[in-house]
Amino acid sequence: MDLGSSTVKLTDLASCGGCAAKYSAARLEELLRGFVPLDAEDLLVGLAPADDAAVYRLDDERALIFTLDFFPPVVDDPADYGAIAATNALNDVFAMGGSPLLALSIAAFPESLPTEMLAAIFAAADEQVRAAGGLLAGGHTIRDEEPKYGLAVLGTVRPDGVWPKNGARPGDALFVTKPLGTGLIMTGYKRGSAGTQQLERAVRWMRTLNKDAANVLRPLEPNAVTDVTGFGLFGHAHEVAERSGVRIRLESERFPAIDGALDLARSGVRTSGDPRNREFAGPHVELDGVPETLDVLGYDPQTAGGLLVSLPAERSATLEAEFSSRRLFLRRIGRVEEGAGVVVQ
Image 1: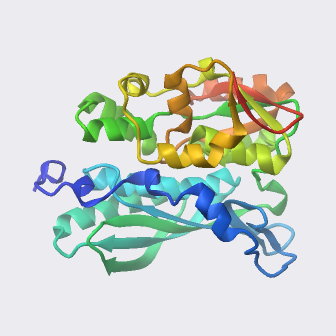
Image 2: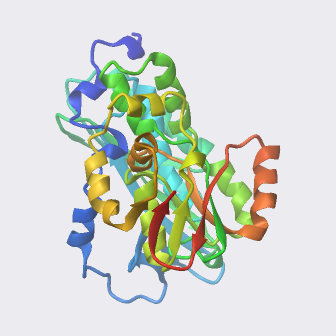
């Protein structure tokens, strides 16, 4: 059976897919306000403030990173869906400076889906976990008419090597390690506005683990790192700025876009996550003559996006040289200043 051309289309079973399905960040902040775990000296990262994953110190040499992430289908091909969902979860560990160790599947599927489709999802996820350096060791599956898949991931990191969101400092340079636009392209493809080539480009980026980028970053000791996912570039930049007590200045003309994403934005394509991201980050983002297409790109929810890196400016040349020598994508998009909020020029 050709799963890619199956009469069952996974995305038809979902109201929205990928990280665009995330709960509103503004409502999530309200929900979690005041909800803080009991004080624990060894809980290095929890909800005060929240980050990409929780981190618990075992001893002076080892800490555990724990995260989970799952979402409805973002594409119809089962193997792509499994790999993308796995990548999105695994990347939270890389965003904290760690390495994946163990993963468990979180799955919800209609019983009507062909077994071959489910097997393809699980197999692709397993392959991706192994590529990340971990093992897929089980999981839990329930019945649900809307498919959902993801992973709970356990990783390790040195306690003094954790990359927080709240460490950006004035004078830092800002980089991203993947181009933007997955939300626009997925939405455009579903509506018939984007072609197969654009879809394939987006899928390649969404299947790309942040492992290699994190390995290059690690010896350069970045001040702050997060991955750009459902809240979009502007939403995640706002999180870094607010929690670090700094202003982030972004240069919109340097925003990297997957081929075709800006054309879709120009034609009026918008994702279901766009208005929620504007509600969350909009009050904190100042736009200074930014073209509408780049504004849309900045709010576009990403699935399995790249890393947003805040690094002392004097290490920028080394970072760029290291990424270039390994043929890894990197784009400098701004800087960190004293102040507050996000300024986009």
